[in-house]
Length: 496
Image 1 (cartoon, rainbow, N blue to C red):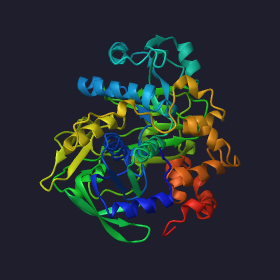
Image 2 (tube, rainbow, N blue to C red):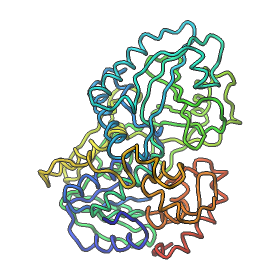
Image 3 (cartoon, one colour):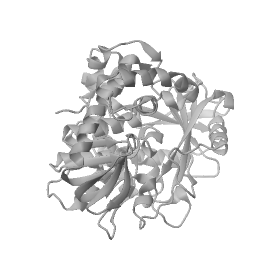
Image 4 (cartoon, rainbow, N blue to C red):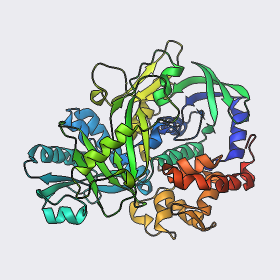
């Protein structure tokens, strides 16, 4: 099973796609589109996936890097979505991608005058779902109340005055959301899917699409029995009947250390069910997010994180910290747009349910949903094609690099590489170990071009690694990484 993606395979797949009639053409290379490609290919259907930019270029790389168990949905009374999230979290963490996930302790600090009864009830309800779906407590322990001394040990930066303790619970964290999407796409390729990046849909019909190779400008047609639009917030640009209400979720990237070793859940003043999350990362940095603001007008390729969002996040997070956060702590910021279905009410109140709709011309669109529930979204979209009676198999298909969690520690490679590559870490480690950045070696650059579908420096710095989240660190590396793209014998694509 060949899971390697590179420029030479891309060219061969473009040539084949232009000649054949495929069962399913997927437009969009985010977590939903890659999930659809894997689902369809694993059921024996022929698949082409076309992505205008790069894998995980859009909303999928701008997440909070969490695999949610659905606690927020319980708070809003949406038990069905909460249950679905708990099921999917368990599948990802125990079967399909243990290497790309880890348990994340989450602490709600308790201060004088704040009642903990409602929050603890919600945590117990979330843990009940965990037990119902049989996610082991050894992976995600039960929630409990802890004293102030333990809260400070977990989060030394907490404000000490009035601290009465905290509520400690556990959820799932992604090592890297973009790398998860890349693993999905590579696994789909291993099942025969043709993954075409930097190939834009010019026009879309129910029986195919006009596509453009953005590296060369050449256009070609792909004929398909069914077409699935999985372009997220851009779905309405390809299918006019799809009406969305995008919502912006902003995060800031902090340099400060010593604030917390665990995630902090900080209530937003004046709101019962909204929180700001302070999220420690495997690279030692901290992400603080996220906002939920409606967005009007044209959808940009890369959303901008406004200064007002940054100020809001710093202010809420600082409300529980001994030392308030300032702009000097901020290394970068990013924003993603949620593809929410249009409905009455504020964007924060819109349902996170997904929907599969078929337009008059036959194009199937899948929108809404959450990163965690991508697999269910993909299965529903493939079911809607009516091309197969074989049920979805993806809950039992490990992604590239996956193995049982207890085996990961026995891989002969640095822990940092194991967290990113799983069973492939040993192969990566045999390449050039020289570091270009604390989170990027020459070996990883070579691997990205030879096996992960990277075609240029931007793909490496922004999707195969997180270096791009801090522009001051990424910009000096562009020419260096570009040199490896040109020198890679597998990367002589037209236009590169």
